Length: 335
Image (cartoon, helix red, strand yellow):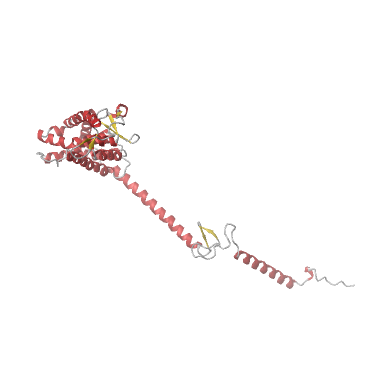
């Protein structure tokens, strides 16, 4: 008896029918995948999370922003622009530093004659600077109870602590003598007429003493060391007779502490202050002006030789000359 093929056996179906059924199944599965992908939301997003760019429904975290598929391209472009801008700024800063280093390398160092002058000025300063580099070990702090309670009245209306004033007067005369000795050791100064020497010393004495005190500012104790031996606080110096001038000297000391000046730089700065051709009553103005130019040029070349890391160090240091001149003028107006 002939057996009929089973309708459940797929092999018994015609070949064309099996091929069409397989194609329908594949198409149906692809549709299911597409529908599931279109509704896919990452686990770290809320269902109603919005795109930060357009406000549409977000699909994920793209380039550090929660965006939709369309806006993530915009965010990518923006991040590229930020990275490019940062790279440009870094390159500009690198070129600026390279140019500064290159310019420093090509600046002239002191000549043989200038080195000789620099050594003379440095030795003149060291031999007349009280306590030298050992001032921190030799200094004595003024007792805190001195200079804290102003009592006597000055002609300009300021109150002065007489005990502090008495302490300062003990060191002022030796300090002035050391400034005079410094000036006499400079060959250019000794060649000037006596009248000009007196005028120059009167004009620069307070400025040089202020500079010598300012370079001995101690940030830890917030004190200035006067004449290399007496450490005083701001209020003590103010109440001891200097008044508002003390604030200017302390402020100068704070700013100079960042410059890290050596003995030679302090000495040359003093020589520039000494040879100021604009003092009233001078006879040999042109000669003094040429002397100051000689010191300034040697000073600038020495700064080039030192190669400080502070940008625009030379003009910033020259501004301190102006500050010291103002201190001297302010002090002269009070007495």
